[in-house]
Length: 557
Ligand SMILES: Cc1cc2nc3c(=O)[nH]c(=O)nc-3n(C[C@H](O)[C@H](O)[C@H](O)COP(=O)(O)OP(=O)(O)OC[C@H]3O[C@@H](n4cnc5c(N)ncnc54)[C@H](O)[C@@H]3O)c2cc1C
Image 1 (cartoon, rainbow, N blue to C red):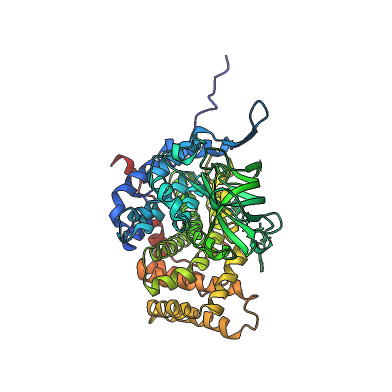
Image 2: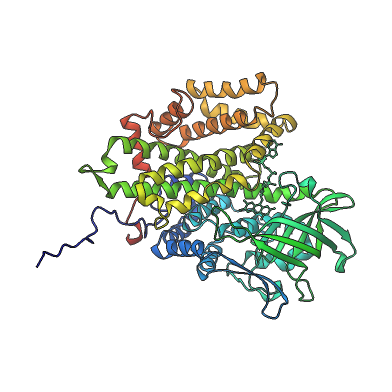
């Protein structure tokens, strides 16, 4: 009898990165939350981090993407249905994130007459978003839009009275029913049409007065309408006075379904758990927000919030990829040594960690300015929202790709989360203002809102005082502004240099010197480089890895 040889002994495969508390295991996140004023929510974030990093929650994320939403246009007897069916895992993600308040926690103070916004509320929410994204990024789209829709809803007092309590509700209600029969509601937004997304002035959807209860009747198409099962939408359409913003509820007051027909769902590179639809409006009732012709001015409030969320989500995706990579390298042996002890792998991981830390500092600093009303915070919010969204969302795919490679072949397979994170990564740069649009917005601030610029520039100058390399970076920004004859063409240069300068300045204030020195040396001066794993010395690598390595077993402590 030949000897039976087992071929299925599994050796040298690290444990899976699961059952890790995404809050307590992340040193940089915890520090940023405390520093920027979100520390009051540490206990809640701890609990939510434990959930988002649990094996069960990560499995929900996988299922919600593997079993993509399905559009049901008609019922069995041929009547219009226009509903989207989701896997239960998607609903479970929504329920958990709504319980954590992702869709509205920053607006809670508005229920108490005259109450002030809670300091740090946007920071605490951003931390929850940062972790929810790591569980599953697609479902945060409707939650982001709901949070961002509140300033617009409040401009319609008649609706706000009945809808706002349901916005604040933390119990997810996915049923396709009129708002008054539901425990909570979510919102979407419809701007993009086939002939123009960035250029919304090209919108052809029309709105004419004459609907019931002083509504307009809206007719046209929307090329991207994400989360079409939302209870209400903020939609741009052309009225007599020009492009205007309308609130379009899914159901009307008499309980009938508003005239929105879903044509099909997009098949997308990533973001698969999130249903993005093409929709037609057939005389749908919509209520004007603000004045006719002021649609962009009205919806821009909403868009500013969603841009913050894009940057936060991208930073969360980067953290997730990095944490998976470091964890894998801690458990995988190659040539007799753990990968985490191989000098070149340490260099690569530390270099990715440097970008993740910089991105994290930038997004939490930005989130803080959404909590503050002073001129300095307002200026930072105005200028640094497009700068931060541009840079963080653009560096995410590259960082995620390199982290994926750290897992070797496993990283490329769908069994591990890296491939899914990689497919997700580009979307935050494309929607809510693509890269060029963000860069052009930065130029617009310099050209048309000169009162904003000095407040940010002076703050940066204070932060970098006495640091020759950061001062040189500051001068580079000045040089772009003074020497380029065509600012539009130089918009990316300006935006990227501003992002790098702000990141360097923030790291100098907030992180150990080895981290900020490493950033300044490799991102703001030194040899040209295009790939990770270059230019850091041993002490910097050690410091970066100490901060990047997930503090594990925290679920059991
Ligand atoms: C998954 C997904 C979900 C989405 N969900 C929604 C949604 O719910 N609601 C909604 O309204 N939209 C949604 N969108 C649409 C998205 O916001 C738009 O695709 C985006 O704003 C770009 O518009 P566009 O596709 O028409 O491209 P265009 O406007 O044609 O832009 C194409 C490219 O040109 C660049 N560009 C534009 N203007 C200039 C310029 N002046 N100079 C140089 N370059 C320029 C842009 O940066 C972009 O890279 C979604 C998109 C995706 C991918």
